[in-house]
Length: 266
Image (cartoon, rainbow, N blue to C red; front, side):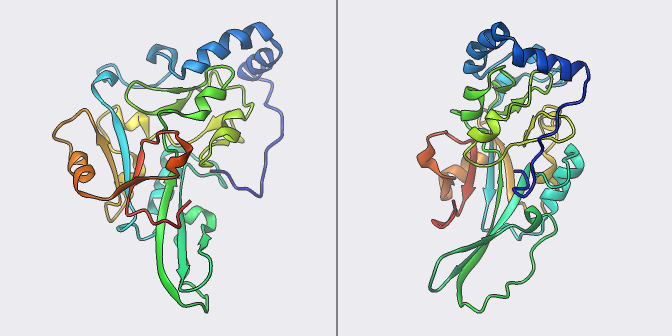
């Protein structure tokens, strides 16, 4: 998610990658061949620098992410951990927290000061509240993701194990994927001039580590599960809890699930 009050329209620096992006923008042949490639939404690990490890087999995993809104306390530790781990630019967010305040009468009030990075101040509303709760949000790593479908150069792609990633070496910074994402989870990195978003800390999970946001959560409100592992606790949660999707009517088949998602959440 990016800061809606800011935008970056400056040209990319004249570097090797900047020249390459400019060339791709001007080359109809290059774009034509990439469109069919990008429509697949899938590329091989050898095509992506730094993805995975030598002993990681992404055919043996199928990752899903689950957020328990009953547990979340809105402390912002997940947002701060994500920024530190992934060097997220100021004003941009790979994950953020929204607070929903539902009055006894009237419409729901939603706020997310600084993405919830530093927590939330106590409510000062004079309205009588029926309930109030926090909803962390992030890239939904959709199975039918719009972002991979609109990318003209195949920079946005889906992995065999369920993650949706961006190859910064291919990305030309056109912003099509940012506009196509219905969840507002992508932004153009002002330093690299390429698309950026949550990756589930793919560089960590392929080494057997937890995503930074999950490791930082003090109340275990976040869970990364492996659907290919029959012993993973995620199966019991799906079988016994009220697990829902964010805006299922969009038909993007999100792989980020929620426990206790209220009807007011959009």
